[in-house]
Length: 144
Image 1 (cartoon, one colour):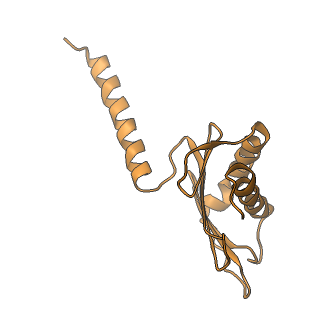
Image 2: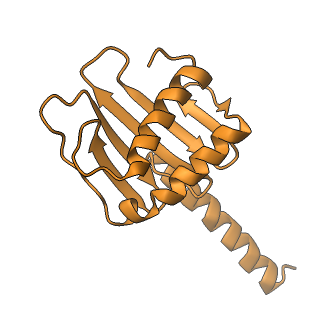
Image 3: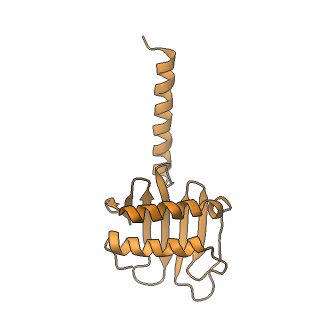
């Protein structure tokens, strides 16, 4: 015979798993994910999908998960924290003429959209773009 407390615990656990699967299936960011970055552009190698998780795992363009170094993971966590305010306000900065790369970043707090040459970018967006470039090259072995 099951106790009511056990039934509640099992129901809560199943609800949490179902919610996680639903978010993962929709391409969303789960609680264990720091951010999902999608980069686009009109130059070779511009297209990038980067999923960074709390444990230091990173997936580039859907490939197998690779491991960030400890300093890279700390940097990703700091960037995520610094994205809280822009993401919660759904910051969207228009590209200026001559833009090469566009970024769409989803965090647990919301979404940020910007281009490499958008006016008024907070410092965190420059750091995020550089993090994406370095991670794609150094961790995932991509050209850009």
